[in-house]
Image (cartoon, rainbow over all chains, first blue to last red):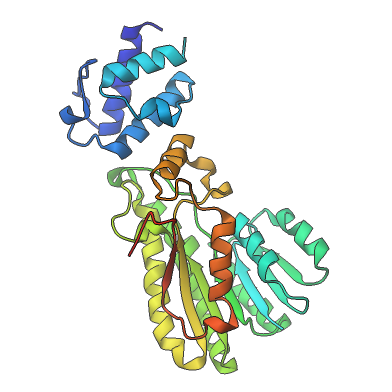
Length: 80
Length: 243
C-alpha cells in the first residue's frame, strides 16, 4: 500500500470517526484543525487504523505524533 | 455463619472475592450466566459451600423465580454483592441505540432493584446486612467521552446505594460501593490494548487497577467492623480519580 492509498484509508477513518463526509485531511492536518480531535478521539482513530491495516501500535509510538503525516509514516513503517 | 449472595460471581472479581471472604461455615449463592464452570475450582476446594445458579438476570421472571427459590431453600443472605455489568462500548452518544441503554439498566440496575426489594427487608428483620456494589471511577468527576450507557447505569447504581443506605441504616444494614479505575480483567476483552495502555500510563501510580487491589477494599466494606460506613463510594484508583 503506498502513501496515497494509506492517506485515503485514513481519511475514511477520520470521516467515520468525526461523522463528517466532507472532511479532507492532508499530511499537515493536526489536532488543531479538527475541533473534536482530542486525546480520546486520537485513541479511537488509532484503534480503527489498527483494525484497518492489521497492525498494532505501541503507546510509545503514538505519544509523539504531531500530525496526520506522522501517523501515515508510522502506518507505512509498521505495515511494511 | 455468613450467607453471601453474589451476582456476577463468575467474574474475575467475583471469584477472587469468594476466595478472600469465604469462611469454613459460610455459604455462597453464586450467580453466573453460561460460565459456571469458572466456579468449579472454588467449589471443589470448598465442598458444599458454593451454590451456583446459571441465570440471565434480564430474562422475564428469571430473577423472581431465583429469589423465590433461594428464599425457600437457604437462610437469609447476610451479604449481597452485585457485580454484573455489560462490557463497555466506546460509542458516540448519537450512535448509541436506546436499546443499549435499556440493556445496561436491566443488567446492572433493575436486577439490583429486584434483588434488593426481596433481600433488604429480610436483612432489616435480621438486623444485619452488608450490601455492596461495584461502580467505576468514571462516575467520579468528568467521565471519559463515548461511554454514556455505562456511565448512566453506574450512576444509577450510585443513586440506589445512597437511597438504600439511608433507608436501611437503622436496621444494621450497610450499602456501599467500590469504584475502581480501569481494572485489568476479562471484562476488558473488548477494550483495545491501546486504551488499556494509555489508561495505565496516565494513572498516577503508572498502572491500571488489579483484582487484588480492589478485592481487599470490598472485603473491608463487607466486614463486621465496617458497620458505621454506609452510603459511600470508595474509589480504588491509584489516584486517577479523586473526589
